[in-house]
Image (cartoon, rainbow, N blue to C red; front, side, top):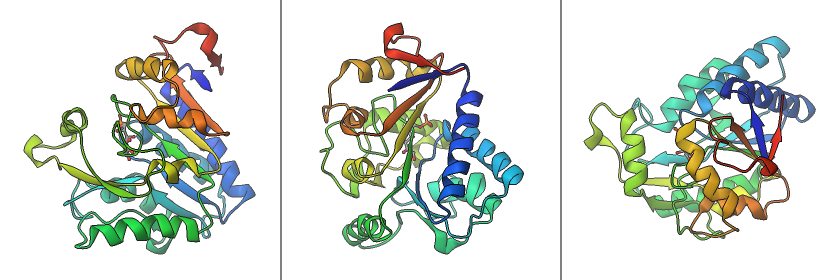
Amino acid sequence: MFFVFPTPAAIADHLAHHLTELIRNKPECILGLATGSTMEPVYAKLLDHAKQHSPDLSRLTTFNLDEYIGLPASHPQSYNHYMHQHLFDRLGLRDSQVNLPNGTCTDLEHECAQYSAAIANAGGLDFQLLGVGTNGHIGFNEPGTPFDSLTHVIELSDNTRLDNSRFFDDPAEMPTHAITMGIRDILEAKEVVLVATGEHKADVMNLLYRTPADPGMPASALKLHPNARIYLDAAAASRLPQEALYHVE
Ligand code: F6R
């Protein structure tokens, strides 16, 4: 399940090719998307591939994993803003094609129930792209989140708040809570790829390798999925035993 690529750019290229093919074979496909620094090269390459191959994007639907509570879509650190800036606007996707949880709605419980229902009503996710936190979170499912969880409100861990405060000019602005797709929503995707790059992800990848499926380590839920792969660059794979790795040239 652990695939090692020489560089983050090689992962981005591979994924961009795979996603472009997926869209070409099934233009009405439903993609689950992530944000964060790991995804920036992936989306940049996807734009290149889309320009080169011009797949029909008019029937595509996307669902993002998560959004901070309290940040309006216009906030530069909202995930809504990130997705429009890095992908949606540049691909020319219409607002009706893209979905993110709304972190400023007044009825959060309703928003969460509606979000998981919308994924199911769309026919379920064909593909889910994941990053991973240094504490093993996927989406914002922090350690301890039940594997049968649907979209829910989560209090961000101190670890996550510390990691992500780097994106905020004033770290005190870093939200305390988020809405995240649940682990069950993720596990119900037909195909899942988790990407981890950089030396700072090496310890959590080692932990993931050694942990059987256990809610204390959210990314380990992927061990229960029949079609999940983990894409690492050499730095993120540096603390894994060689026999666990499949090298992609
Ligand atoms: C973001 C998300 C998170 C990130 C994770 C890694 O939508 O779901 O799980 O993927 O926090 O973030 P980076 O890539 O910034 O290290």
